[in-house]
Image 1 (cartoon, rainbow, N blue to C red):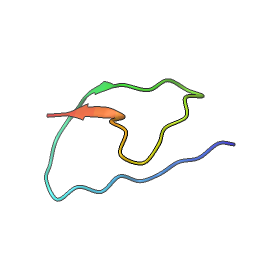
Image 2: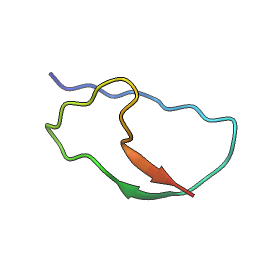
Image 3: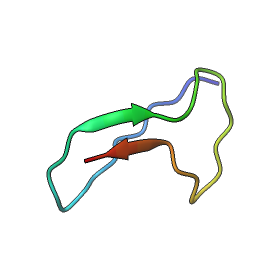
Image 4: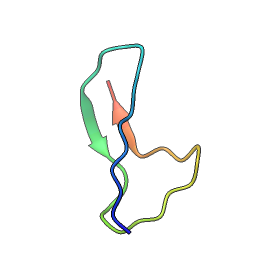
Length: 36
């Protein structure tokens, strides 16, 4: 199943690192990216 999900944040930032790969299953609360 292909899904896209908008991630909203009250602060500005730049995505520095993506921690998941295409096809990975993630659970609520999992860290998927590092934003600075």
